[in-house]
Image (cartoon, rainbow, N blue to C red; front, side, top):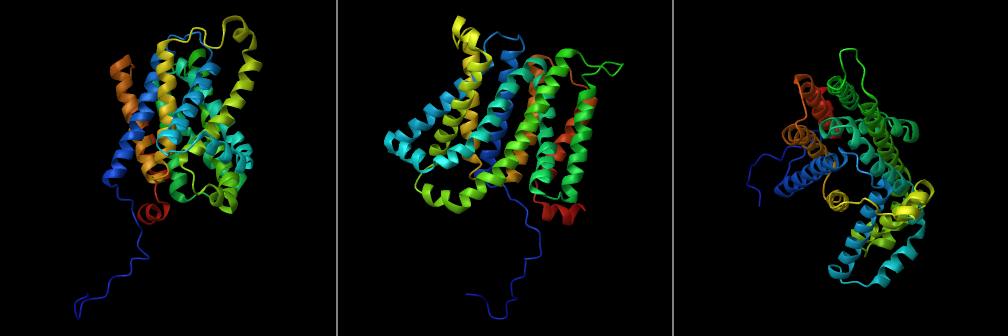
Length: 342
């Protein structure tokens, strides 16, 4: 009961709201940051010697692991049958068709990650891949006609400057980079472009459809059902791609030829990471994801220097500061940041 004569509560509707990281949010942040960092370091560890296994086999392995773990979750945790998966897929078959586009984009990203980290160190890759913010902004403007806020424009300028500074460490005095590094850079930019397109496509098509009918149909299904759906679409697409690109190698030596235990570890890590990210995104927001990304960039750079002897100079650390600030600004709550910064 309010005290007599107490002042009325202040109207905070005009005040910006800032995200407060709870203990649960902090655990999520650490989980995301560690997963992103470990994925980059493990892939670099395996790919730096340029092993001869098929990258299509690795991506197929990731999706098979996701499908298996998601199915086990439904059977053991949700206590539902395999028939419930069939019912879900049948009821939501149209969404399965829509998911084929981001699934194909994700498969492309996964394949290019092996190419990029075979030619770039983990520190450089973790910075350069943040150009996906620029690609997402460009795709959002072209497809969704979204206007960028001032703080987002500032963040993209900082990001560009940071990436350019970090890339200076890879150039010699004449400003040239070797063919291997160039291949890694182009692969990473391909990942960023694919990520930006997939994000905008998801926002424009899948979320719009979900608001109409899919939520009502899927309200009794857990997130694991969506993972089964996405993994199924990915396996079909990647299977077709593998048969077209690597048919002769598969027929001659088999799909898993030269697939070592180290490659299996990267596959399992990527699969677990995908499931973790899908799960935590349900309970987090863009601010938290920005913090996790920023932390992973710093962690990857430092650990790459300690574990692999990557040479990082002051220019790289100046660049990484720009990238971290850019990620935090772009993913922050624009209303609050606009009031305080612009």
